[in-house]
Each structure stands twice: as structure tokens, then as C-alpha cells.
Image (tube, rainbow, N blue to C red; front, side):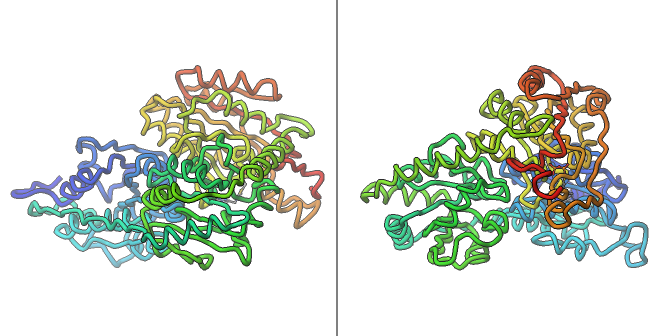
Length: 554
Ligand SMILES: Cc1ncc(C[n+]2csc(CCOP(=O)(O)OP(=O)(O)O)c2C)c(N)n1
């Protein structure tokens, strides 16, 4: 570290600023290009510096920590190589609207623009997957640009930003300077827009509410429950926002995605008025850009004007704090007589539950994933956090999982495999190991990032992993069966003995070969002080809820 005669080091000012704004976690793989940053973070009170085993894991962890705390986390990697590895998690933060600050090391100033070791134009490279990416020109600019990075990450539709830091600028002296936080705009819905919304909802024949991540972010889940119950409108959650509406409420119709049960798809597509709250109405939430169906009216509420009308034109578009908008609706609803839709709502809920029930069982051999997820729902405490990877196994998590409180589910709307384990490790770090955290993954996705269990082992975190081992990249195998019947190309997998794997990490491994073993496995995992990996042996034929591979051309 170079000595600084007066003032403070630029990187120290940058870290202090982030700490004062609420940043608590920095995840990364160290590099020689940002030693000054590591040094400043390691001594910053209140910041947990977490060394991961791959930068992809670091970025996924930063995404998960931010979703749980509401504050951006830092992820770090060195130059082009570390940045390339970070990319999957940065992209996920973008699609998931998660605030994130990527701080990546860059080649030192005298060596720049000579294709030095691991040199690339990081601001261009990361520019396509961030809200803003910039290379800091010198130490003096670092505090100001850090303040700007935080503002961009947390404002409007939150998302990732990246700062490329040449190692030699970090220790430059800077004058202490204040960077006041710009007051965040707090858009209020107009009384007229709220009234128009309620009028449309009241007159609707088959209205539907879609609850997105903005409901979670603004802390409005409980208020949304109150609104839905006042106006008698069923709620579906957006793709991978399973905890945006409690699954046990009578108005819950589950979640939208490729795994949505047919009666819920039909009900959603039959909606004549759709109230979309805090969601960007992504491809999977809209069932492939089909929902709202042609002719249906969309009322779209979000804090960010950029998402309103982005995928569907809105009849009513409201830029507002999501929680405030819901509260205004509740206030005005009290004086309005609402049509009694309870009979219809009860039958929608009954159809939904019957379809879920029908998709359990019927497996040719091996374990029924529905049984495993049901045992999880039965034994996990209400505040347990479940994380999910991408893969067909998720269809069972979505259908049979119980999510009764906000902050109990973490999944990537980017559909990135490899998310579940690092997200679970991050959740366990945030909860200091006090709350059970369960990563759910297929055998493919699990081994993409299972190395991050070393972080859990190093910190003694009791992370639980439930791996649905069907010896294949099942999702892609199903696509193959449908599009290239009878042909298998690159989708078969060999997976190691995960009992021994868990033991090698100092944890316990449990193999589940039959449905009857699932309950004991979950209970043993919850009772154990350390980490557990449950390897549930699923038949290759059990390809998706209610679907057998042999019946679809496989
Ligand atoms: C990083 C990444 N690579 C590839 C894919 C494409 N993909 C989606 S699902 C899937 C297979 C997942 O297999 P597995 O984890 O075993 O779960 P399963 O579908 O068998 O339940 C693949 C390869 C992806 N979504 N993410």
C-alpha cells in the first residue's frame, strides 16, 4: 500500500461511501488488479468480505443478498477473466431488477491499450449487461463515480452497474468530500388514476392481479393481500416471484411460467382486466407474450416509467411507489360496493388445486419430486428461505412449495442455471445461519456452482441442498423429445455420489431412492447442525409435473 501523506485513499473514500449508504456485503474472487479495494473492504466496519470460489458464484450471491436486504451488494472480479465469470450474475441482476455494484480490476494505467495481461475494454464488455458501466479515470473521480454507481443501481428500475478500477488509481490521495444522497423521487399516483383503476376492476367480469418483484421490493405483500381480499380478485405471481403473494391464501392461483397448470393458464388468458403490479411483464410471466390476451385491458403500476407499456400497451399506466398505490386503492375501496365474486374465485382456486394434485404421482419409477417438495413445505419453518435453479425440477417447486412470507424464495428470472447454491449460501450469510436455507436444483445446475458449498463449509453455514438427480439435462431432453423424437443429443449426465460429495465438504449426504424416504431426509437435514446434500433419485421418465418422457416421444 502506498503511503498517503494527507487526506485519504481514493478507494477508502469509495468504500466508506458505500458503507454509509447501506452496502453490507462484498463477494468476489481476489485479483492482483484490485488489492487496494480488498484491503479497504477487509477493514471496513460492517462490511462482510466474502471470498468465493468462482466469480459467477460471487455475482449470484450479490444478487441474492440484495434481494433479501433491499441494499445493493458488491461483486468483484479481476480484469477480463474475472469480469467474464461475473457476467452471468450481472445479467441475472439486470433481468431481476436487483441493485448491484460490480467493481472489477483493470490493467494499470501505464500498461493500458497494449493488450496487456487480461486486458479488454471492460466498460464496453460490461456495458451491454449493466445499467451503467464506466472506467474510472483517476483516483480523484472514484468517490464521485462510486456515488453515481450507487444512485444508478438503486434508482428507477434497480439493476447492476460496473466500475472498472485500474489498480494504480486506488491508493491516490483524495480530499475528504461529502456526496449527499439525492432524494429519490417518490411518485404518487393521482386520485384520478386510482379511481379509473377501481372503476375498471369493479366492472370487470374476470379480473386478475399479477404480483411482481416490485411488490416484494416495496414491502407491499401484506397490503396486496388486503387489497385482493377487499376487491375479490385472484392473484398470480410473476415468474419466479413465488413469495410475492402467500401461497396459502384463498385468492392465490400460484405463479406464472412454463409450469403453470392448465386451468390457471386458461383463467389468466380469460381475464378481461389485468392489474399488473411491480412487474415488467416478462416473456415467462406473460406466457410467451400472450397475457393479457387480445382485448383485455391492462392496468400497469410500477415505480419505473420505462417498464410501463414495454411489452403490452397499458390502458391505465401508473408511475408510483407500488406500496403507496396499493394503499390508495385500499383507502378508496372502502366506500365502493364490490361485486361478490367469491363463488367464482372459489371454483378457480379449486380448479388450480385439483390440477396441482393431479400432477403429483404417476411416476414410472424412482422418487416423485412432488413428494419431496411437499415434505419440504410440510417441515420447513415459515421463515425458511428456498432458492431455485433453472430446470424442469422447478415446476414441482413452483406447484408444491409453500411460500407464506416475503423473502422466503429466491430464483433467477434470467433462467440462469447455477443460481441456487450460491444464492443459498448468501441467504445463509445474511441470516447468519439462523434460518434454514434450502437450495433446490437439478443434477445439471447443482454441479455448475456446487463448489460454492466450500464457502458454506468455511463459515460453518447449515445450507441444505435438495438435488433432483434425473441423470440428464431434463429441460433440454424434453424439448428434444418434442422436436427431435427418439433422438438424444448431449443431454445425458453422469453425476457423482452426492453423499460422498457432501461428506467431502464436511457435511452429511442423504440419498433418497423412494418416496417414503423423503420425509426423514428433510427432517434429518433440518435437525443437522452442518450442511446437508439430499440426492433424490428421479427417473429419466419423470420429466416434468404430470409429464412422462415416454409419452412425449422420448
Ligand atoms: C447457464 C445456463 N446454461 C444453459 C441453460 C439451458 N438450460 C436450461 S434448463 C437446462 C437443463 C437443466 O438440467 P438440470 O439442472 O439437471 O435440471 P432438470 O431440467 O433435469 O430438472 C439447460 C441446460 C441455462 N438455462 N442456463
